[in-house]
View 1 (cartoon, helix red, strand yellow):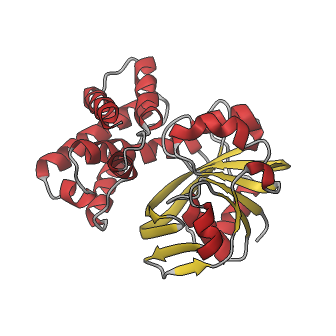
View 2: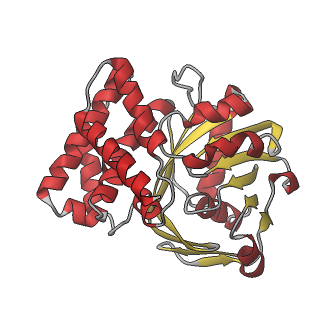
Length: 310
């Protein structure tokens, strides 16, 4: 392993990938809040389709000021906590360190770049079914690949760099498939094709992916929402082939029954990631002068439900 890693957000995503990196021999440091005492006593537990494991000892911290400087800071917080980044990121990065943003939505790298500097940011889109089911306890259900790309301030393709390759190699040594992408913005729009319809509908309809796919009307609605996402992407200079949309539907059809992260947040009465996943793409649509009525209606429903829920 070439790098040391700090995990900011030791949940379903950060906890899983961090645990895999440590199991493969990487130096990993975990920022923990409510789970700290449990993890100190019992370690970090991962129940996975690839085989269950427990890390009996991990480098666990309550405060970033106690953590060492690291080569790579994996940002896996919910985007609703990004107001904390100005305090969390600066104490963790080595002079040549990089922030790897593993968050859903649009514009997340911009926030990290404003703090760490644009030349020190990369993005990753996680294609994984994973949930945090208890303190220090993660359940990995399906998939685990990451699309990894370089950030650029003007969102032009960042290319495939030596540092991207080096970090990708660390993850692959941990048995995490990496898709190297020269165009991070395109990868973000491709991920939003799934996140916008299925995260949103899972809350409004109170349904799993399997239940949604089993209903012809909902399946068609999801596809129509995807087409609207594709229209925003195209207007943003990132056209996506229609076949990609149908491939996503087919992949969702084959998933194990899954409660999306937004549905789990809703059930736990946590704030929903509506700005990152919905509002920012809607702002991009408005700037491009295109209408996306299905996404707009879904967003308004979610705003209402989120407010009532909290």
